[in-house]
Image (cartoon, rainbow, N blue to C red; front, side, top):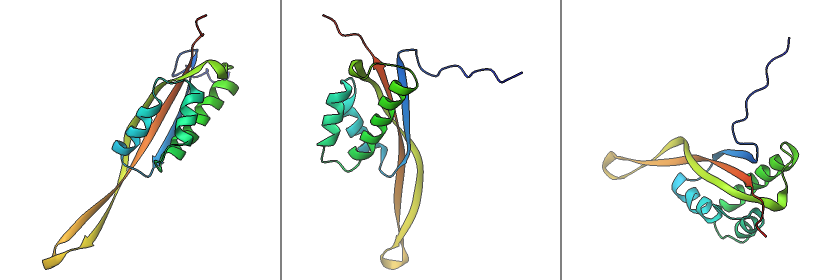
Length: 126
């Protein structure tokens, strides 16, 4: 009389990781996510390691989590993984303000975003 197992959200040869509440705008985060889409995971890790973008460290952490999920939870071979998807979504926005001239109020928005990375195992062609 136990609970039924949840169906998988991704295919059998895929693993997923999410990073939420990343303190950057989705537009800036998407520039970094674009760098790794479709690449092998070792190449993507190297790109993120040497990137000058501040948020690249958080993207690298999320990618490492996706690789660990693939290896430990789904028994996939790490050497055959590629970054199948890397997409960005909006999260909350903190509203702050700054007093301006003539009694006006300058609105400052501090956006957060979230990142989803899916890795897929592909067999190498000989």
